[in-house]
Image 1 (spheres, rainbow, N blue to C red):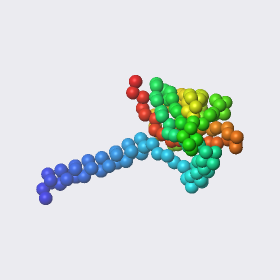
Image 2: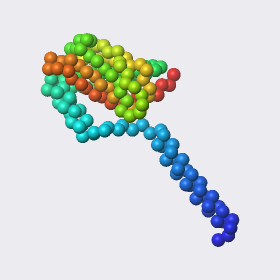
Image 3: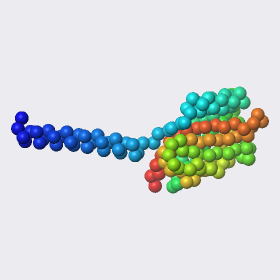
Image 4: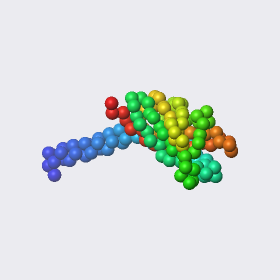
Length: 157
């Protein structure tokens, strides 16, 4: 092997190592992961709240998130098992947006009832990324917490 080939080979190896190191560093800085201290217990709590909603006779829908500037409009559909909307009073509802990972603070959302069975939350400021929307509803059987996870898109305007 000539010295020119050895130099080219070493150059390729160094570029490859540099690319791998750069990718690892960049990936570690930009990843958005959900970390739970005690995932088993969190899963049990989640199941317990879902089962309470089922015992009450409720089915929950998926959030629809519409982003405007630094705020997000969040909607949660709640229906009885027969498909009829659940009647809720605005004073019985609270919603907090929390980031599963990262150092962003929780955001308290202004809540209201849009129409029968549809809750509306206005959350501001809300950065893009993974969020959990924790909705607390005071029911006849005590407070019920519903947790819905969604990804809030980056604003385009």
